[in-house]
Length: 220
Image (tube, rainbow, N blue to C red):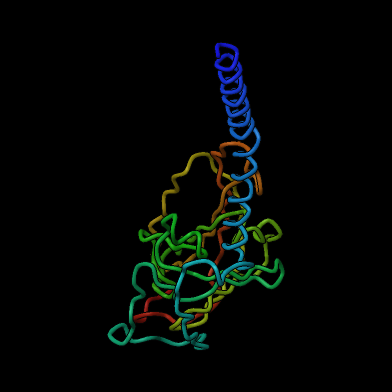
């Protein structure tokens, strides 16, 4: 009887040891692998590969082809927070990203996000737009000075030319108070594609206004 109890105890100890070893292996090997799969899935969803499985229900906006003249401010409907109101394009670099109002983490999973502290295209100030360098703004790496950036919006079509590319440290960018000198500033994390380290730099693409309808008759 004592031998049987001893054998049962040995069996229990062996099973427990196997369980512990398996748990340690999962935590050391399995969990990182699962995390990679999870990250890859989210990345694929953001890029649109699996967008049918991604629970984002946005309405594709109707784009206006008005590229000059003046828009009566009383008839202009200011886009609201979280709304996609256009797209950002650059033919030279292959850039094509949906443009949203706001730059929260949720919005940046959907596309490029415009800072609430900046002006809308056509208002004569600075339009500040950010995006992730591994997804929607990855193509910015191919942009050069002189390239044309097009914003197709619900109320007009705007074009800007890249005039400066600079790198800053830190996450804060002081929006210059520009009067009658509209500019577009696109920014993302730098260096491009470096997801293994904590990046403290941003790369800025400052673009000069070329054309587009003015809202309320502002001078640019």
